[in-house]
Length: 305
Figure 1 (tube, rainbow, N blue to C red):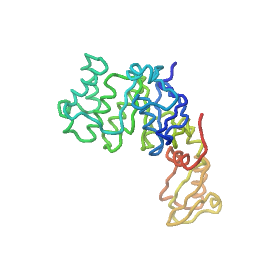
Figure 2: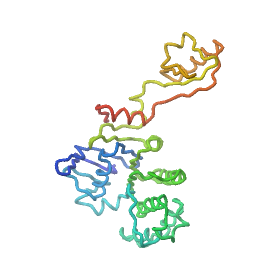
Figure 3: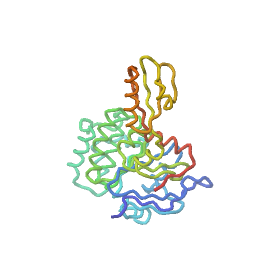
Figure 4: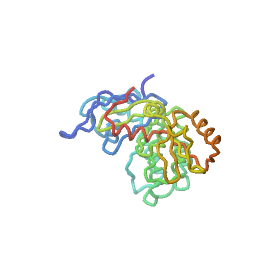
């Protein structure tokens, strides 16, 4: 099966300023994939090259097997992009915008799908409203609808939930997850790392134009995981001697212990019960994708598989 997106030896420079340095990446069909990195890492530049809005200095990119430069018409038909910026035409209604977008792709009879998109993105009541009258969150929903109007097999979401409310996030993700279940490939860039951890099966991390980590979300977390931290509020505020070797900190009524596994937590609780010490509060802290991100951005090591 062809990759949904195939990026080969892509370099991009602006004058003498390097932005992307030998980026190689394959995103499989049907994946929910995260492309993460700090501001200035090159994410939006890479997306612009995939979309055909910017030319790479060297290298090639294919979408569903079509070169984005030499076969750009087919490549763009297979791609839908939700941009980070709120870009819209102020002279049309929501429905007119989607009808015009359909026309760009030569789709004449698209009313049923447009109606479904409007309903699923909670835009139906705004369908006949002018774009200028919409809130920022509603405009972002329209951008998502525009990207989906031609039913592209590959969807790229560039910071789709930046500055929007919780309700929109939930509505959007339910719709996108359903599209992914139906076989659409979804590529997500976001600074909300909990979204990427929850939704995405694989993650690539960009730093200064280079991919420094590429693996499944689970594997990346496991690579930097060194056990768990458990915080306890005890009554009385003392720690049995056999648990002192696990102690990280102890102050302000909270003792923090380092555990190698979940099973060790039962040993801790049994020891406290035996000593007649009550647990008034317990909080278990697990490593997550944010921990991986912070670690990789500080570290010069590369984790690519």
